[in-house]
Image 1 (cartoon, rainbow, N blue to C red):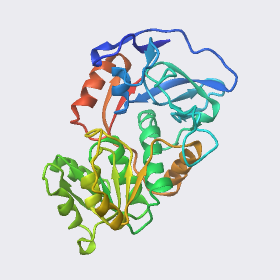
Image 2: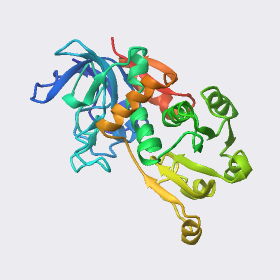
Image 3: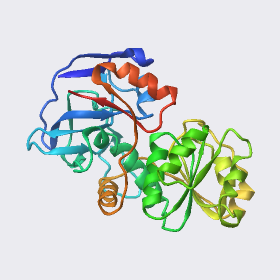
Length: 326
């Protein structure tokens, strides 16, 4: 098979298309002939060696294609070996593309429980763009965050795949969604997907400005933070509000004032990815609610994975970046 192979860790220039052996057969695993793969922010630290992936390696958590044994169109659940406990993943859990070879290839091997039928209304590119961000957001908003219709949600960092999916899913179930962004254009795009408005996080007073968009300026029931700005995010919450944290793109550490935290009766909730049960919940939500396909910023052929990574890391797009695999 042809695959984008990582022989050394580094920048986008280490990604090279070359021939690799086809995935080996193993009981309980199946092979998928990929039609499309999607990039995620997570792919960049994997590429740089943050997870110690075995070399040579193939990146990629997201994909959609044809199941080799049945000919069925499927989407791939990138959350491998979750385990029996729905509250948290087990010790053998991993993300596809961290240690198992991933989806930047013509073929990928995954556990049989990690495929689901491709949604009939989605293209291959749209299907590939769904699993990781869709699963992560579904678990963050509903399984962990307990978001309900009528609640006020603040989504940090409009423009990225997680934030974009969060706006769509939350608006679909009847929540009122506000966003933050570095760009008025990205706020406008978020509004087109169902948000009521947004504020620029480049303004130091953005938490107060965001609160003003809530009824009575009371604050948000839930804040979804994929960027790592806990202190500011907490100050945007109403008393008793919930902060769901699922990323750290702008900060690896946080300092919190303890007394305001417990007097505010806040909840700080960590989450990442999700279980097969969460994935089934996501697909059911898409079947029963009017949710548009995830926006796609750009589609690159497989042999231009380097350019796709450069585009992703520049941060100028709105939505997902996808590799087309012919």
